[in-house]
Length: 176
Image 1 (cartoon, helix red, strand yellow):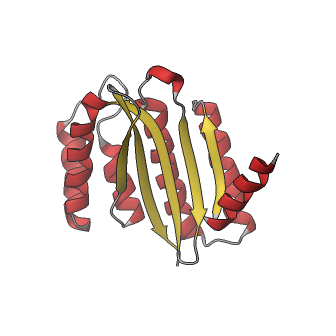
Image 2 (cartoon, rainbow, N blue to C red):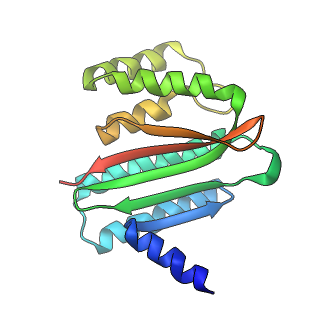
């Protein structure tokens, strides 16, 4: 039973206000968003900050729902939101096939190299020139997260086995 206290202490030490691990469906996504919204409402967060955090959370959760790969060993996805004095940290993690890593790195690195105007142009170009993929996206999610958060996206890949990795994504939204 000590692990419960250890988990609680870890959440407090890292200022985590919401952690969810498991299956991600549209219904679960709605519930996670509602819990986070209630938490921000009860803490009296400003509406402009709530809107930005909510938008980044939606994109992050949609990324998991639409793009997490089914891998061996049944690794599930995770979503966390933490509240610091000056920012909210939104973190997600999901399994992906190693063959998808290079494309994902290139996409996020390209986004992170752009300033506000560059992101706006990239967003417009994607809308004009890209067809929606089989998984339902046109590649706008990461661009939108960077635009809404106003910050670079952090990421990492942790090897699970020879064919798959765990993709970790971090976005931060400054509090006013």
